[in-house]
Length: 212
Image 1: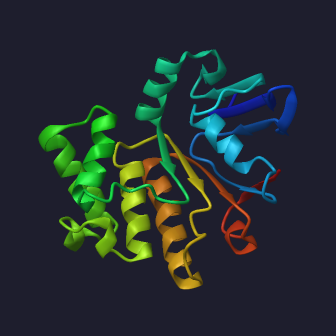
Image 2: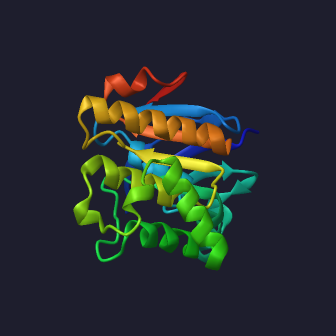
């Protein structure tokens, strides 16, 4: 069994089948792009891998754990320790600085104090944001906001990195920079990367595509 494995996964809302997903197996460190129209199940698959959603049928395995068999607190612990999630809308805390946003994410992962501060500054410097540490999100460009969201997603060094339409708000030049940062960050972490998109341009940057 690979690092990530889906078997016979069906998601229902009430009696209605919302999504039936193909079986999927990914090796540790593999990078894959999910593509398909709206409603095909891309975000649902990411939510299943993040432990935010439990399948109605089937199994979702990550790092040897069947997420469907975990209780809510166990899934919370799994998510804090092993998952980095880059949401399409960033979800930055507007009243906090760039540094504080990353520290909030580290705190949820149980990393605090000097260790957290040093790690947050390190990842922000790597992403070219060392001059923005004291700025609030409203003072940042869209591309900078996305880099803060990426820093927050990876500062705790997850083994699984999930990204939902990460280039949706960016023009092509900024999208290219963001995608390269995401891919190289995953490589640096040796993390498995699963990215959802409907943009054919993004698809060409990945060695493996899964159509939903």
